Structures are given as C-alpha cells and as structure tokens.
Amino acid sequence: MNAKELLHTYLSSIQNPEAAAALFADDGIIELPTVNARAQGPVAIQRFLTGLLAKVPDFRFENVRTWIETPDRVFGEYDAQGHVVSTGKLYKQTYAGLLVAEHGKIKLLHEALDTLAASRAFNADGV
Image (cartoon, rainbow, N blue to C red; front, side, top):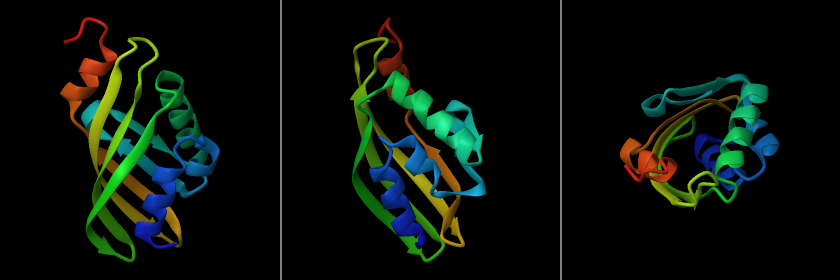
C-alpha cells in the first residue's frame, strides 16, 4: 500500500487495534507530541490503541482531507469523535497527521491535535 492507502486503512481500522497496529512496520512509530504520547512497534501500538478505546469506546475518524500526497508520504486532516467514559462528554477533535510509509507499512504516523478540546472532554470539571 502507498501512504494514502495506509492512512485511510489505519483510520478506518481504529476500532480494531490489532488490525490497525498490523499496518505499522516492526519499528514503526505513532506519536502525538502535543499530548506527550508515543508508541513504537505493532505490539506497543496495539496496546496504545486499546487504551484509547478503553477511554473512548466509540472513537472513530471521519471526514478525511488529504492536503499533500506522494507515494511514501501523506499529510492530511481528519475529524474524530467519541464519548469519554470517565466524563460522559463528547470528544470532538480535528487531527493533523503526517504518515511516512516504507515498504508498504507505516514507518511513522505523527499527529497533532487541539489540546484544549481534549482537556475539555477528558476533564470532569469542564476546564
């Protein structure tokens, strides 16, 4: 798969952590530096995604917009939403993601998000 195909497959597989993690190279990385999150390798990435779904079981991506695309890199924005178990609030977010592909696998998925929107959804006090 090329970078764009990998991104779309990853985003549509988010409810299946094993399938989503299998898209990553053995040394592939997912990182969200704005929230200090990083996982490397399919096993760690599967754990990371399983943890996300434990907090937001109906988490899903939608409305993917691709802005820059080459066979081995894609940059785009995509919306996410789901209900946070601990607060009952709707987590609604737009991610910006850069995916680097290598040999048909994800080598790097670097994502940025609105930390204020995340804080509002995950904080019971409503920050």
